[in-house]
Length: 313
Image (cartoon, rainbow, N blue to C red):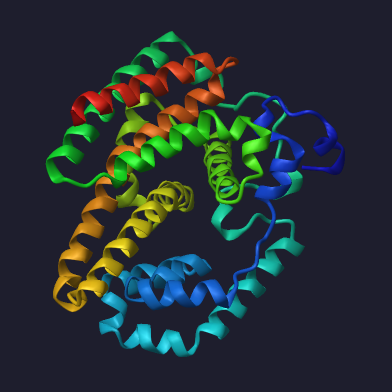
């Protein structure tokens, strides 16, 4: 977007010049944060995903850190990996390109946000609102039942966080300045900007996207970016819960005996979070881009949470 375009008021307050500038900002990766990620999640490729090395992260994940050998080698070469990642981002910034995590976006000089999404005329209408409400009720109820039966609650926390941040914090300037909340708000804006620039398709397509997206992500940049966006928030919450579980195992001296169960629960929760929360957040986000008023989105969010509570109870 040109400087003149940035000074013009955007159609949606979520796409103010400050937000656009923030989303196009290239934030450096720091060794102090990369090291604990590599230490605790290195065998799963966590540090490589964090540094933007998607493919090597996938291979590391599938091979459990190359039988832990690759993981140990990375621990000794971590500074070089961080420096290389930051150098790549600096080059993209000089070229006016978005960060790699936002690689689905056009160069900033070509971004236009002063009109509704190009796909809006094809997707707007009462039928879409009704279909979204039905699917959100089904998703919420199924998530509640699944969480109740399997006794893990992280997916419920993720969905509640998304709704609160998306329809409350992202529209409240004071909340956006709170540390921690501001990171979640940035994530919500990334998701909205993705669907602003990429046609989400029909309601059926949005609901089916998690399963289909996993299959096509390795070959398509936009699909990979969407999958990564949906996994980021859920993965963070699940990771925090997993760290608490790991600390509990350490305190009881049962870390090694319980590591298998811990990893199994981690993957199950990630899968459940992705399959349920991803379509729900996509439906709510795309409807936010279509509605001139937030009231419809508030109602859809309330339907989702109510159905989830009914399923859980």
